[in-house]
Image (cartoon, rainbow, N blue to C red; front, side, top):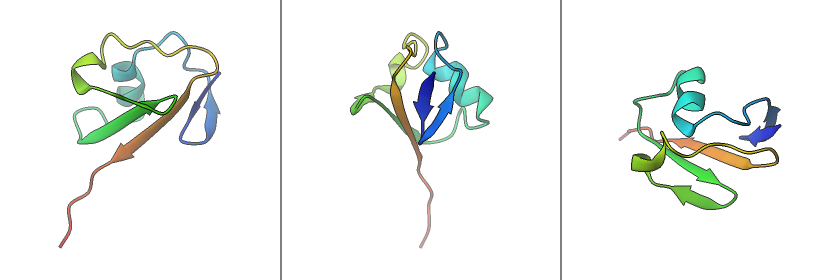
Length: 64
């Protein structure tokens, strides 16, 4: 199980890119942190989630 934004999900073994696509937010401006370390966008495809990882996904929204 992987904790994503506070929710335990069965995402171990999937890449960050796969999880973002499943969440419907691939291609959007986001920041991803795994175990308190920011993951560079260039590494989303190769970064594989493991059991017990804690992931935070933050979306950037514009406003004025």
